[in-house]
Image (cartoon, rainbow, N blue to C red; front, side, top):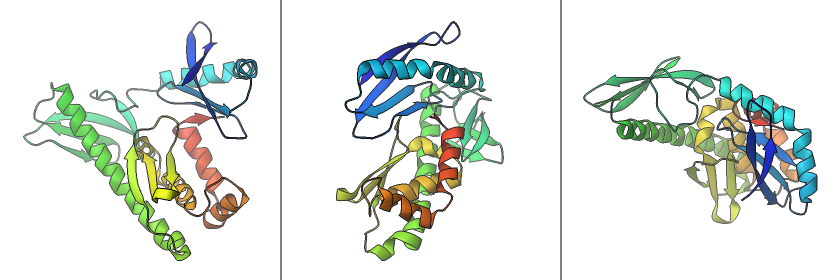
Length: 242
């Protein structure tokens, strides 16, 4: 993957913007909570145009990174600290570690309790939390896939797809119609259920329409009239997109 160097100023310094060239018509610029900046462009856009475009968005990128740096605690699943925060199903939750004979996770309205038999064992803590997060994602995603498949997709003669979960930096989901498979981002569990539903229906729609053409969006609009609002909420609350 290519990168483009961009100087943001004295606070955030110089960053490397990840550049992705692919078969698209529009330019997509995203700043993630991980502080990764990714620019997707059509395959043959000149490098000088890309540098000029990034310069014109320099202030916006700087503002988003500054905002993310100011958010409290941990939000990337890479480190578990007592009292740190994380998004979970659209809510800001606090994580608390407790000593217990059995390793498990419990949640209430605003807290996630991570019970482990050794709170000094960082690897144990990370594994316990990651296992719970992945299992929860699998349950939530599968429920939504089953629901939208039964309500919308099955009547078109398409088999229910296989669902896989991966950690992805630039996509919330992807669909491979030839293999009847949908892949969903593990981090999507940070979003509220309405946003998850949007991603699920979006990917299920690709089983019928592989490209993002008018038929695709017309179908999506018929079955989820407010999908644009859901997408905007997803881009705003979980990842900043332009």
